[in-house]
Amino acid sequence: MPPGGHTYVLNQKLMSLSGDLWIEDEQGNNAFEVDGKGFTLRRTLILLDDTGNPLYQIGQALAHLRRTFEIKHGDVVVATIQEALVNFLGDHFTIRLAAGGELSVSGDFIGREFRIRRGGTDVIVASRKLLAVRDSYGIQIIPDFETPLALAIVVALEQMELEQRQGRGVGARLF
Image (tube, rainbow, N blue to C red; front, side, top):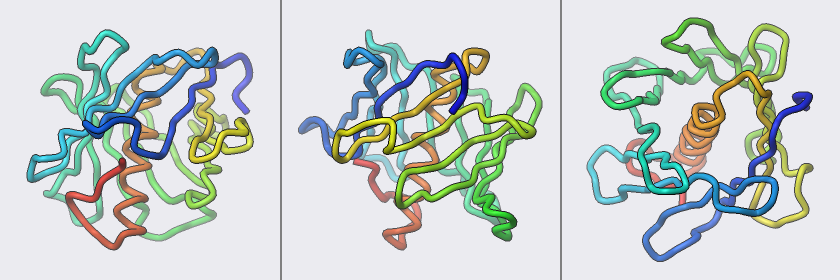
């Protein structure tokens, strides 16, 4: 686990009739909201702060050979997540940050036990073992990694895995 980081809770099931999902902090408070925007052709998820201000847009990029999601801040792509061409040593996805650097993702997505690493260091750890709550898992983030971006990355990975499991492309729903 990343030392000294904060833990957030991602609930995997529908949290409201509108299809929105809340991400809770360690104290159980609503910290971030994922707005599903479910009626668009290219499914877009929007990460909002607790007052409803948009932070990041998460959506599938269609102009790539491999399945790719982009995370945007406004109109600027800040992260690109691509499915690994070959699953080498358990790496399932590669994340390229616009600010520079690359992250690797490995683990058991069905069991919700995965790690996102920069170099050899865990920067984000997602695990059901962090919680005793059904249909939820904890997300730990190191202090020097931007929390909303880390959560947007996890939400994008969750959406990508859901689409893979359901055998669908664009339009599969996270919640």
